[in-house]
Image (cartoon, rainbow, N blue to C red; front, side, top):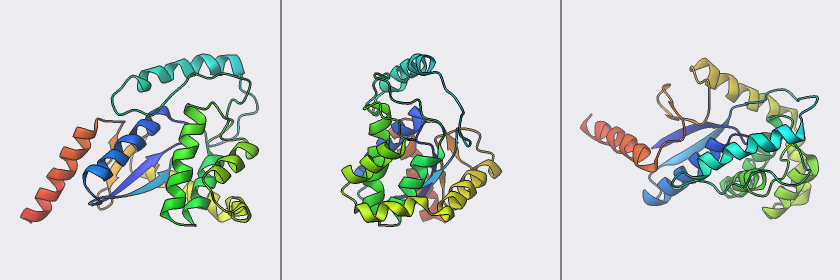
Amino acid sequence: MHLVVYSDYLCPWCYNVAVRLERLEQDLGGAISIDWRSYLLRPRPAEHRDLERFREYTRSWLRPAAEADSGTFRPWKGNAGPPTWSVPPHRVAKAAGALGEAAFRRVHAGLLRAYFFENRDVTDPDTLRAVWREAELPDAEFARSEDPALVERILDEHNEAISMGVTGVPAVRMADDDVAIVGAHPVSLYRRWIDRRRADSSAA
């Protein structure tokens, strides 16, 4: 069973769905695979974002933090950020993916943890390089993140989601279906959805 997930690294609910789908993968013993695709909540760089206003916004992260099977959140402390746009962390994640699934998973998890718990600006080049190193990936390979082809791929994935009617994230669909489930739902809902699809396939 192959799932496609549209997600953004600046979305707290996407952090929760990442945690939940990882648990589902473990529960199902490798019966599903996940293709993480880009969706851009901030597709263009912001010229200025007010830090105090951003700090106040991050208090809203306590809501997803209070749910079961959530990521680990902390309202913003310190003077880093705010993040300016969505593209930079996606570029680094895609560059890691070119090195293999394990490399992608480490960077993917590292970006979410860095932003939502460690309060690090994941649009800052130094932070992105640090997340790369923390994932124990070769320094020389970080240059992959500057490949213009990655930006084209990110935009293609974002536009693909839009063309399917996705207007928010996280959004999860079966690879052979263009209808997505939007929102960070409980693990039990995704499990029932997958079990029903598998049963339908068996019956067919």
